[in-house]
Length: 312
Image (cartoon, rainbow, N blue to C red; front, side, top):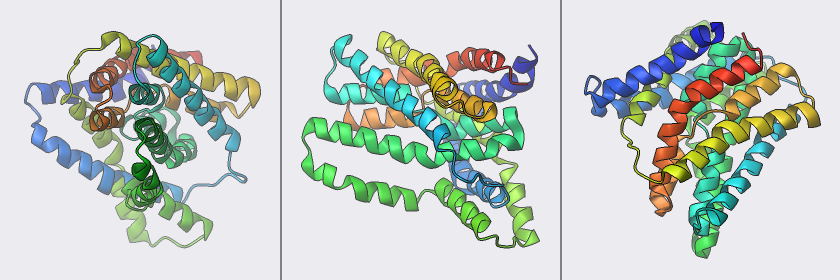
């Protein structure tokens, strides 16, 4: 009960408030884009820079931590594709998005606030390590799979350039990498920079959670319920369970890092799954429904995991 009150309710309570406020017109949809842009461009990047420029870095990098998380993600992705092909009789492109549904979580808008609320400063480095490898890796995988399934050779050839362009123009990655570079070269931080980045960073967590809930109000449960439930089960149950097994029984990594990997794996389906499905016309109804269902169900599943991991 203490976990529910101290950790889950503040984060998910804000999500639900934003969702219903937007659905009932108390928070206009026209403001959602502006708030999201503020979060992604002017709040989270300064927070990342402020934190990473002062964070003690591991030496060497915790590759076992990353392998536990992303290895489990690839396993779940394959399972999702197999279920889509064998059970629901979908084509390869549709199955590729079903795999992404099980692996791609809402790491920025929900993951960062949840981890930092739960673990404090100790969760900073692990969560940002995952974020550094997360989006561009899954985006590349789904693009290759879908384009290969369609036989679009020209599209495949453009993928490396698209990935490079997205990396150098992503404000979140820019903030993260600048902070790491400042840290590695042990450069002094002028006090005004510390004050401004810290001030903006304090707005990041509540605004990110509110922006997530408000964004969800744009989507509706639009069919493909059984596919959506299968994808949600892979995302909320299979992914964290496999991550826990790898981190505990194969690598035996530090319990704090293991717990963070498990909670990050248990995050609900991210909105980019729907955006890719809509772009490729491959299972958009299932993706939208999975995103909504998994978000509301994750209130209980993440609470259970925090209790199981004995996180206080």
